[in-house]
Length: 302
Image (cartoon, rainbow, N blue to C red; front, side):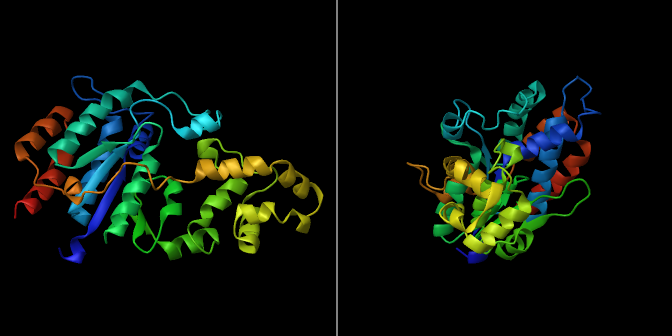
C-alpha cells in the first residue's frame, strides 16, 4: 500500500451532533413533514466537507456506548453531572445519521460499555499508529489534544465561517506552553476542566498551572514538591493531593481498551450508492448538501 494512502480519519460523533443541534437552537430546521433536522445538518456538512476535501481512504465514526456509564462516573459521581439531559431531537436524529454513514459506506462503532467514545478513538488511533497510519481525529473536543504525536493529529472541521484547523505537536506546545501534548493532562488536572465538571486544584488558574507545568513537568512532581511553595496555595495543594491524582485519571484518555484489534479493512471507505444517497437526502430535504454528495460520488466512481 502506498504510504500516502495510509491516512485514517476518526470522527468524534457526539460533539459534532450537539454543536449542530445548538447552532440552530433559536431557529430549528424542520422538514415539510415536521422532522427536526438541526442535529443532522451540520454533522452531514462536516462529513461532506471532510470527504470532499480530504478524500480519505480510511474513516470511521465513533459514538459513545449505548448502555451503561463510564468508569469515570463510577469513580467520581460529579463527573459531567452538570450536563443537561440529551434533547429528544438528538435521540431521533441518531438513526438518520447512521443511515447516512451506511449510505456513504463509512464504518461506525459504539464505545464498549464502561468506556467513552474518547477512549475508543484513543485506542483505535494508537493501534493504527503502530501499523504506520497517520490519524486525524475529527472533533470539536479539546480533550484529544493529549493524544497528539507525530502521527496523530486533531482535525477541527470548519464551522461558523472558520476554516479547518489541524493541531500537531508544535501547535499544542505554542498554544498551552507545554513541552509535549501529554502535559495538557497535567495542566487540566491542576486548573480543572469545566466541560467535564472537574474543578481542579483550588486556587490554581491557568497562569499558575502553566508555571507549574514548566517548572515541574507533571502534577505528580508538583504534589511531591510542595515544600517549594508557601502560603494558601501550598495548603490548598497539600490538602487536595488525592483529588489532583483522581482528576488526572479522569482526564486521561484510555488508549488500550482490552480485546480490541485494529483491522484496516473495517475502516476502508467503499464507493457510495447514489440511489441511497438521493433517497435519504431527499427525505431530509438536504438540497444543497446533495450537490456536495454528488461531487463526492463522482470522485469515488472515477
